[in-house]
Image (cartoon, rainbow, N blue to C red; front, side):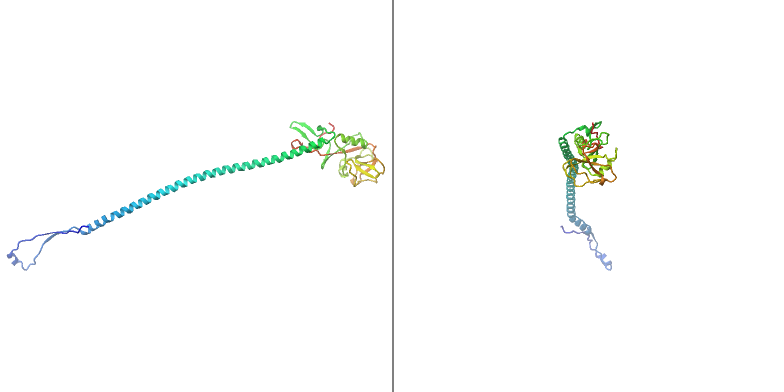
Length: 299
C-alpha cells in the first residue's frame, strides 16, 4: 500500500524593516495554505477495495452451493418419480394378478363342486344299473315318463308308497289272490310280498268284505313252527292276534286293526285275499329325478 501524501503551499513575503518596527507589537503571522485529501474517505475506499474480493468469493460459493442443492433436489425428485412410477406399476400388476387369482379360486371351487356332482351322479348311475340288471323283470315305463321338460323318473312306481328305503304297493282291487299268486304278482313288478312292521301297514289298510279277510304279507310257515320271510330270514318277533296255527304251509295275513301289535293271523295259503308288495327304492341320477314319488306299475 502506498504512503499517504500531504500537500501544502507556503508563501514567503520580503522582509520590511520599517514595517517590522511598526508592527513589532503585533504578532507575526505565518500563513500557509495546505491542501490535504481526507484520509477517512481514502481509508474506507481502501477497506472496501480490500473486502470486495472476499464478498465476491462468498457470493460465488453460496451461488454454487445453491446450484448444487437445486441439482440434488432435482435428481432426488426425478428418482422419486421413477421409483413411484415403478411402484404404481407393480401395485397395479399385483392388483390385477390378485383379482385373477381370486377368479381362479372361484373357478376351482365351481369345478370341484361340479366334479363332486359328477362323481355322485356316476355312483347313482351305477346303483341304478345294478338295480335294473339284477331284476328279473324291469319295465322303465313303471318308473319313468316323458314330459315337455324331458324324461322324469321316480323312486317308486305309481300307486306305490315309499317308507324308508322301500316302496309298498297295497292291492285293493276286487280281484283277490292266494298267497302264491300274490307273490307271483309282486315278482312281475320286481318286488315280493312285504316284509314290514304292522304299524305302517295299518296306516294304509282298510277292512273289506268280512272280518276274516286281510292282506297277505311275505311270511309263511316252512316246517313245524318255523315262520320265514320271503327273503329267507326267520321271524324274530310277531304281532299275532291269537297263537298261530301249527301245521304245514300256513301263511300270514295282516288284518286292519286299531291295535297294530296284535294284527296278524295265520290262514291256509290257498285262501284268496288282497296283498302287499315291497320293492327297494330305485335311486335315479339327480337330473332324472321327478318332484313326485309315483308312477303307474301297470302301464
